[in-house]
Amino acid sequence: MALPLVAAAALLLAVFVLLPLSYLLLLAVNKPASPQRHGGSVHGRRQRLPPSPPGLPLLGHLHLLGSLPHRALRSLARAHGPVMLLRLGRVPAVVVSSAAGAEEVMRARDLDFASRPRSAMAERLMYGRDVAFAPYGEYWRQARRLCVVHLLSARRTRSFRRIREQEAAALVQRVRAKAGAGAAAVGLSELLAECANNVVCRAAFGDESASGLFDGGDRGRERVRKVLTDFQKLMGTEPVGDLVPWLGWVDAVRGLEGKITRTFQALDGLLEKVIDDHRRRPPNRYDGDDHRDFVDVLLDVHKHDKEYGIQLETNEIKAIILDMFAAGTDTTSAAMEWAMAELVTHPRAMRKLQDEIRAAAGSTGVDEGHVAQLHYLKAVVKETLRLHAPIPLLVAREPPADAEVLGYHVPARTRVVVNAWAVGRDPAAWGEDAEEFVPERFLGSAVDFRGQHLELVPFGAGRRGCPGVGFAEASIEMALASLLCHFDWEAAKGKGSRTGASSLDMSEVNGLSVHIKSGLPLVAKPWVP
Image (cartoon, rainbow, N blue to C red; front, side, top):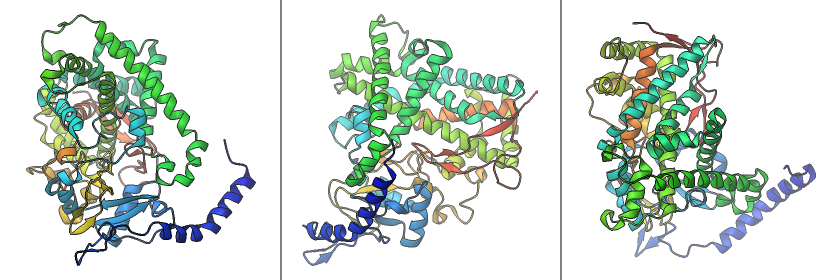
């Protein structure tokens, strides 16, 4: 539904005529109640707020973000410093864009910044009981411990090896079928998304329930995939009305409310079916814990809550499962997509990696036993995540009390956002070639992305670091090794405008994760040992 032209014109006229007056009124009614909170002096000591670029009345700095906020914020940081104070409509936000700033937020002062701001989208779609967006408190501590110890531990991650190997083999077969059908190019982005989704589906729901969700063949599979895709897109969306209440009508015009309702109902029905299926199955049907899926574990916690130290009802189980999909599908496929794109545009690095993989795998094909030996593969994955953090602006933190970053005062209830994309390209941490794809920088280096080295934080760090890093890493490495073992790759002719060894268009598009705007159309040539 579009506003009539006359009405839209009248609205815009009213906005621009009234903005200056509204701003003066806003200043009049919002005078600082506490000098400490607004950078004034307390007991003779002045609090120094971070620098801030010029903004607009009411809108603040929203107009400066553009379609790719991580890039816009990095440009602003170059002009105003690695710690900036912005106003996103009515929401104050501090943006941190350096490794030194990330170190303070996620390690030195981790507890001060351990909470989250309220997320209306997470409350609507994830029952307000998930882990990723929960405020810091007892429920979050217990739920996160459950995820770390019982769902995503190293042992549990290893238990899903069969799933990862099978889905990587299925990915190879899908590529082979498309390449053999005479297609000029294989749309690899879609196949990578399907692979990542299948791995998480099977780990979360088990093979039996995952198969049941796809009743109806391709149509049923597409229906489930659409629901999960809509969920991921909505989780990457912030309602305009939450930032600028007087523009809340924009959400209504674009049908956001209806889409949230429809997606939630579809998700809830899907999860109800899976949980009911698990409850109807006989107990002790597995020989060991290693064969249980996520729903099995969560239902066991529900039955033995005193033993586990946390009480889980059905909504908590659903919310935690949705956390796995939000964190483990779109982000994983984005990382694989960017790794393949960088390798295609750097053929020397691709050949070096293929030689390593094929030497380890021989004529039998690659498995996870081989992957553990592939040091250059691990370097390629690290370098990809350095340059292309799947979620470039990490989920915001919110200090409940006044805090400090690099000597700047951060008032309580201010959103604090770490620009992981900018941190990964910080010349102070990575040198003059920080913008270049050079996997060799990680050979023999102890730097990793598990939260110990704050110059590389694609998964966050500290209390709020992603607990599924090991799960994601294993899925990414297995899929990439399989694709590079079985095929030689190049960009499809005539795609994009990039010059040099490849014509691949590397333009970005923003969402829950940042993907390649035009997808990944590649030519796959089967390799014969």
